[in-house]
Image (cartoon, rainbow, N blue to C red; front, side):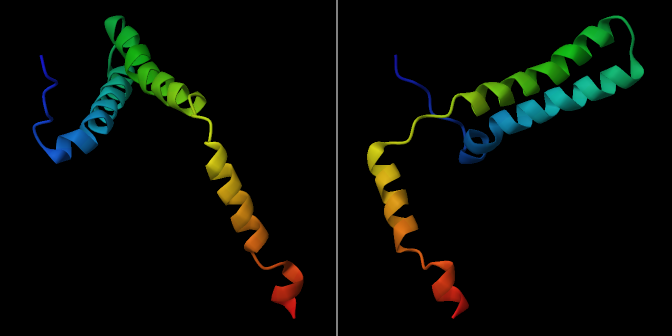
Length: 86
């Protein structure tokens, strides 16, 4: 079984952000206008996007050693403040 291709490049890029936006919007609207089941949905609708953002902000991959060396080379090649002020 082969993985299916996305139906369009637009949905491949914007599918998840649109889903998170719809989830957040329905959570906000439900929190404002509904009781009982709406309270539960608003917690889900507003909590899932926050949980996703936390998950991806904590899962930062470690930089490759060659990338760190390149960043140090760039920093050492930058002009110093003394050279810029004269």
